[in-house]
Length: 91
Image (tube, rainbow, N blue to C red; front, side):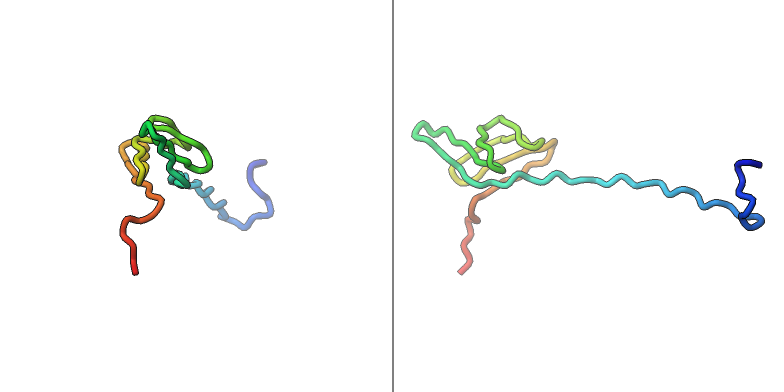
């Protein structure tokens, strides 16, 4: 009887504890700040303030390709094309 509250109303039952749902956190795609290409055509990307080359990782993303116009990053089977400026200019 020690497990029951003697001051609780008759037939009172404690509510079942709520099960906390796991939050699905979507990783934030790195922010492309700059693309630097040398005369040897080796390009580097500045992502979230860090200089990265093709094949390197940042925040769980892999730098797949760097061109003078865009950077492609992957995570698992998903792929993102990051551009400094949109190719389509609205007037």
